[in-house]
Length: 287
Image (tube, rainbow, N blue to C red):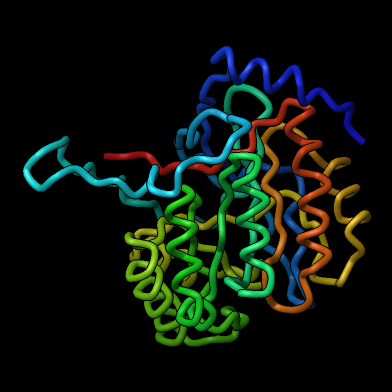
């Protein structure tokens, strides 16, 4: 367990001493992320991609509209163009940057039974996270994707039906990705910039098609193993003991009973913040 320093951190935030850390993602890691369920995970390393953090870590919730305000037509700066992603051979799976930066990710949702509670916890601590959604879940949970956009979270593509992509044809893989991109863009307000293969099972076709659709592949560093139905305290201990600068945490907000995942988040998130971690989301480089 981490030593609690809430008052000190809260005071620093009020004094404006908390800065924005530069963040980028890299595939350079000694060991590959563990696969969920029964499929093997990807291994190896990939080149880094430059990103920037989403903003300072404050201890109060943002106004829901903060991330959705758009300038009146004809005013404001022109929209920048994202750099075209390279066709990688391995997924990105950790962050680097100034300070103790970590990323929390949630897969398989949105699920109306668990995702709202996760969003509420993140809002309470003014933390942004990544949600890799499945298209068939997003169709029924568009309101939750809109909440994610309102709160400044990043929504990624986790395919339409969560298949093992390495067993599908190229055309089937494209369909799984494209249909999900369309739903995300409709509900979230912009197409996804990140993609995660179900079970951590990647191949050349997934990397190439993801790049063609404008998405970078992101895996994880630390698997909470919540998909096994692990107890909340065990999940929290795993996150706290595995916490380190650059770690990308894998959790789930759907795909089974995720009540323990929600309970664990309530336990480990304030501990991470008390320990000085800046929990944030990556941003892609612009051309």
